Image 1 (cartoon, rainbow, N blue to C red):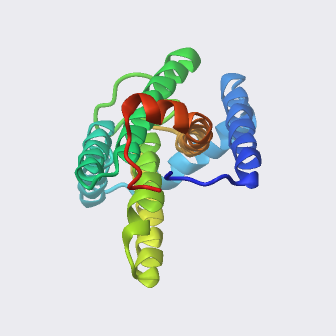
Image 2: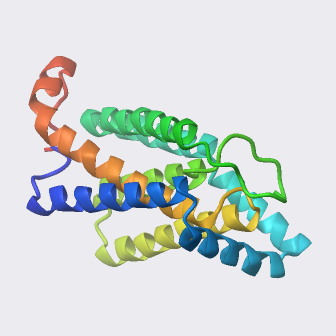
Length: 221
C-alpha cells in the first residue's frame, strides 16, 4: 500500500475542511475582514508592478496553470505505472479527476467575481484558484509518492523546501496579476489539503476491494 494508517489524519482532515468552509463563509458573506486583507495585498503588489515583473509572473502563472498541472500529474501517472506502481498511478488519476470536479463545483457555487484591473486575461470565477489548487496537488504527489524513492534524505528535504517555495510563488503570481484575491489562493491550499487527506482515507478504506477489481500488483507494499 502507498499509505499507512495514521490516527492524526482524521483530525488533520477536519482542520482542513473546517478552515476551508469558514473561509468560504467569510467570502460569501463579504466579510470586511477578508475584504480588507485582500485589498491590502492587492495594493502592495500594485505598488511594485513593472513590465519585467509582469513577464516573470506571467511565465510562472503559465507553469502553474491547471493545464500544466494536469500534464505534470499525467506524466507522474505514466512513470509510476511503468515502474509497476499501478495503485499509485491509478490513485493519482482519482485525485486529479475528483479534485478538479470539486474545485469546479465550488467555483460555480460561490460565483466570486475576479479582481478588477487584471493584468492578463482570466475568465471564470475567482474562488478557489485553480492554479494554486492544482499546483498543491502536484507538490503533494511529489512529496508523498515520488520523493520517498530518493535515497538521500538531505536531497529530499531540499526538494521539499523548493516545492513549498514554488507553491508560494505561484500563489503570489496569481495575486500580482490580479487573477485572484489572496483569500482565493489560501482557500485553494486548504481545499487541496482537505481533498488529499480525504482521498488518502478513501484509499485506505477501499484499497483491498478496489485492488482486487483492478488486479493491482503489490510492488508498492
